[in-house]
Length: 47
Image: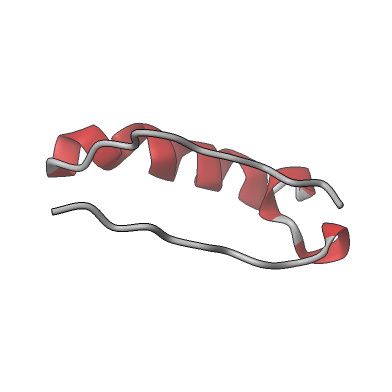
């Protein structure tokens, strides 16, 4: 199965720039293969 997930938010609520949530988000993405999930692509639009 292939899923396409779209996340929409502005810069002020982006977890990547939050000092506490940023590492949590990165760890979540890194642990996906441990759950049998594979990211084929990850795109970012800063507009």
